[in-house]
Image (cartoon, rainbow, N blue to C red):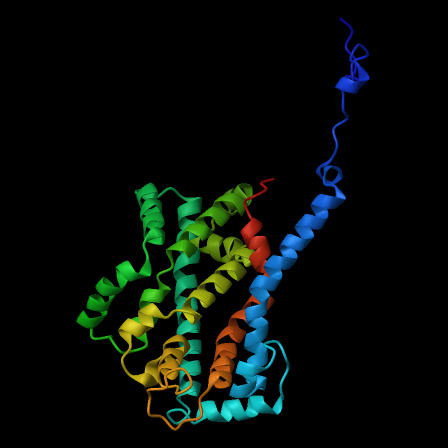
Length: 314
């Protein structure tokens, strides 16, 4: 039998039986494209309108917020008045809350990265005894809700007399099992094994391999972990709410809850003369959202490449 190339379609096939394979882009018609466009547009409007309202709300008075069009722009000078009103609450404690949030987020991030990156590298490049058990426990811990761990954590922090201190928030939040597992997957897929073997032959130990090879190659992983851990710590409410009692050590989420509870506009029964209304609360919400948006914008490229790592393996 003579070997030859396979033709596009056998000569004995009726032409109507054969259809040339088309690419995915050619199979999507204009109607499907239009439907997808409007679906994405509706989703963007649905999730974007609350954020737009939050940004525009500090420019309007309380009366304008309740009577005018929700997306109308007010006066930009109103933002300065709202900020002064926020500073009048408890002698400007909102500044201390912001400083506390930055402290908790940065300290937690440093500790979490110092643990997650070496742990993930060690689990990926070597096979220590009990590795499967460690990975299984990491997955189980990831599935546990924070509400199930708060009581044991509170008892532990109370035993070492760290309740109502910044460490009662930093130390539990620095435990980042998802970061360990993500680092394990990243290093297991992305690290060049031949390069590690050559470095071992040259006499490099495991710490030198991690510091000189693993860490420089983990920029996408680092950007993704920074964004995830910073966002989780910055928006953390339940753990600080349980651990902290003094308003001077509150972070922004717990502090905003105290601010809302003392606002006459939302709780008419409160006897407070402080001019905190809906516009001031919206400005506090912007202060809460802005750092997360900034961190995401700076780490967006690394977040995208870190998420896609492992989906395609050379």
